[in-house]
Length: 333
Image 1 (tube, one colour):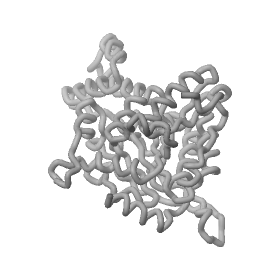
Image 2 (tube, one colour):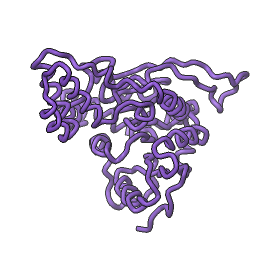
Image 3 (tube, one colour):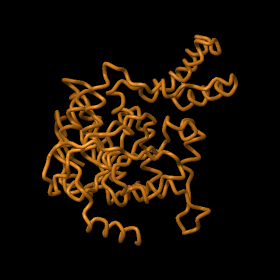
Image 4 (cartoon, rainbow, N blue to C red):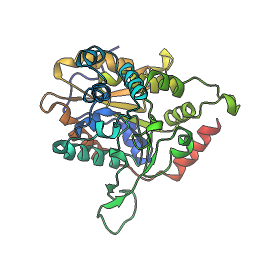
């Protein structure tokens, strides 16, 4: 199959499918740790290391032990940290671990303000509180308004597993933390055991006792909306695979040539174009198109420019009545 792009652009080309989805008010940004890292929060591995380091100062873990543990997979490190927490009755301060660095706060704010303009309902695998804060929202471009002054809008934060279902997909000004939130420690999906429990398979045969409502939520999200993944680098591929595979998004080979309606924004250096081509083919099997951008000049800070550019190109609009009707019909099929 011929490559779908011959260069890594500074700003990704926005496909017509996303522009149409924006007009319908149908885009749901799906946010990973890379966006919070712009604001100085730790990535997945650094977060796990921080949980272990928590036990160095009180002498519950030696530096030699930490050195050995720090080479393990992030989820294993978090499991070990939670074991230390139970053993010594010393709760880990996850909120402190996820605190952003002051000198980078403005970068994170710009990124999240831009994302708020793309989608009113946002899904995230992040635990932090960036998305929970009130945002400045400009009036809907499709609406008839007398003033263009930005408004301060509060968001509803959903993070408890029993609250995550298809009913929340069309709740305006809502952020859905599918792996829990630091606001409520018990909700956080941290270890392999947590993941296996959350993503355990289910049957959708109408029997409530056999249904995993969380997986039903993921299935309907991909069925009804256009999902835009932002903030997922190569190190977060495993998390991304959990989401799309368990959502039942693996497509038959004959369908992989169809144009996708879900997309992922990822950064590459110019010399990584072959890697980008391979990832594009890989994502297509899940019905996801790759939107690459160049890191050559500004590295990951270029993602801020990308988000702000896309906020101008595909701003959120109110959901059209016809779109609501179509979603109802899709659910009944």
